[in-house]
Image (cartoon, rainbow, N blue to C red; front, side):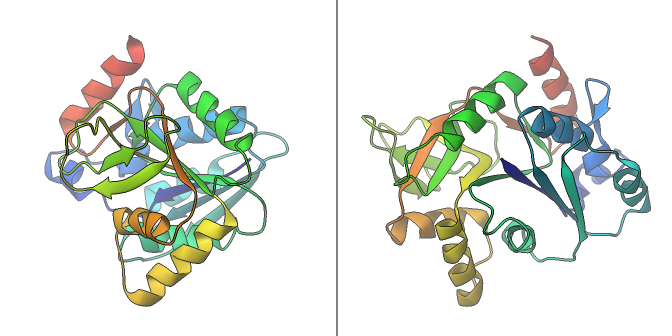
Length: 237
């Protein structure tokens, strides 16, 4: 499996709340978030991992340059200034396209390793008609959650919603299992001026791709200083 890590944000909200280190280097359970994510991906059979940062943080650059991936893992380091996570994903996708199915997530997405491993296995073995497998969670702690409407029988995604509707119980977990056909839609979205990952996810459904969701247990994001303690507590349970 190949992986991409979106880490080009500036982490301004954390900085405003007194967290002085770059967001990817914020420690969770004693390890920088980026290192934790890299090690999990390596243990899930990573062949190639592509990281994209914005290049404005020398401390983060030094960390990435010094990082030694596990044997057999190719680590590609990108520095790009982009206008959104979707544009960062575009930069990453150029190094993942044509290599089979892959998984992309943001650096601040926190989950249990066993849940992620189960998700990786499910995506690797999904039928050919599945063009994308989105991680979903019933834990809602995002300021602007993206609700996922699915057919309960098979978890095929019917739509991505800004507001919860009756019968909708999951939100997007920010972990995207994608195929080359999904990257084709990404190119269309960029060309049409779309900029947010949620709009990209909507476009996948609108284009008629086979988009499915997989409940992956609790997932949370580290956006505020209080989220650091929440993440440590969650993973310690």
